[in-house]
Amino acid sequence: MENTLQIKTVKIDPGEYQIILGQAHFIKTVEDIHETLVNTIPGIKFGMAFCESSGPCLIRHSGTDPALRKTAADYALQLSCGHCFIIILKDAYPINVLVRLKEVPEVVGFFAATANPLSVIVAENKEGRGILGVIDGMKSKGIETDSDIKQRQEFLRNIGYKM
Image (cartoon, rainbow, N blue to C red):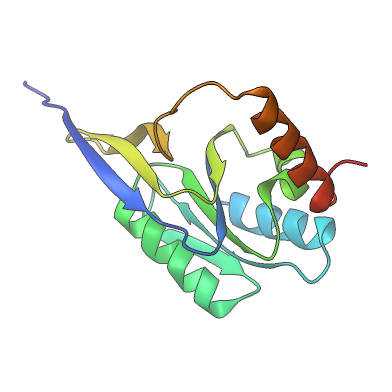
C-alpha cells in the first residue's frame, strides 16, 4: 500500500509578538506550560496551543490574554502537526522563559523562538502531519565587522541584557 508524503509550508508571522514553536508529548502539556509561564514571569501575557495527536485530536489551548490565546489556537490549527505547541508572548522574550520551559517534563524540544516570520516546513502522509523544520527570518548577508560588533554590544547593554 502506497503512502505518499507531501511537503507543505505553513507561514507564521508573529508581528509585534514573540513566538516559541516546540514539540511535547502529552495532553498535560497545556496546563504545565501555562503554570511554568505564569510562575516564571508574574503578569505575563501569552497564548498557547497544543495539537493533540490521539483520541479526539483537538487543538488544546490556554493563556492569560484572550486575543493571543485565539491566535495561538488558529496557528496550531493551521499546523495540525502531532504534539506540536506554539506560544505567543507579549512584552516578554523567549530568553526569559526557555530555560524553565525546558524543565517541563512533556517538552521534547523547540523548533524556533523568535519574532521573525517563520516558514514551518510540514510533512504530511495518510497518518498525519509533522514538522520537519523551520525557516526563521532572512538569509545571512555577510560577516559582521568590528563596527557591527560594537553596535551589537551597545545594543545588548542599552536593552539591559549586559552590564
